[in-house]
Image 1: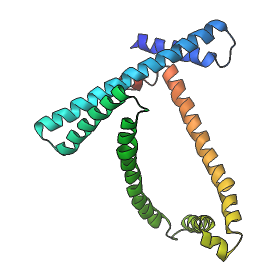
Image 2 (image 1 turned 180 degrees about the horizontal axis):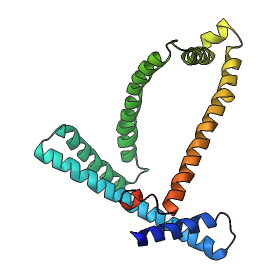
Image 3 (image 1 turned 90 degrees about the vertical axis):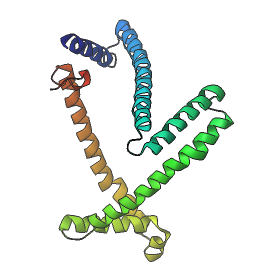
Image 4 (image 1 turned 180 degrees about the vertical axis):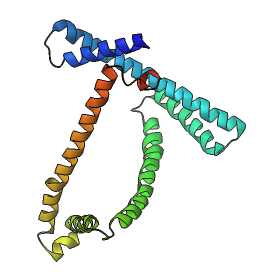
Length: 204
């Protein structure tokens, strides 16, 4: 465990120092580590695919749960992999499977999520408190600014919507980014110091 922590510390320091120090040896080592990272990520994807096949194949064999969906998943995975390897990912056969089947299914899934979002918005946009009232008013202004009928009602709705999206909303988004960055730095420091050992398969 300590050896793995030492390797993590050394490699992380090399990758960090290449952005701050112009040392040829560090830049070369950082380039090699980046290449190895791509290779390891490719093997990890292969391992994930193998694990996916193992779990769903066992479910199909035992006919446990929604095993029909597992069987469809395995068939699509095998067929799509064969088409991609044999014909290439730029071939017409690959585009038929991806653009004609997988992409519409993904669009359908996101379209179904729209109903859940609308339900959540209906519950959130109830003017029970001052914050909920402000959220409701802002949501109405933004929707009217996007819809053509809003400009017919009042010509300044698009301009007001643009100001709301570029000033208050952008300030909130930047605050979220700053918080996420601070959290990422904190986790990185914990990994470098050996406090966080979740990536090694252990506990705190």
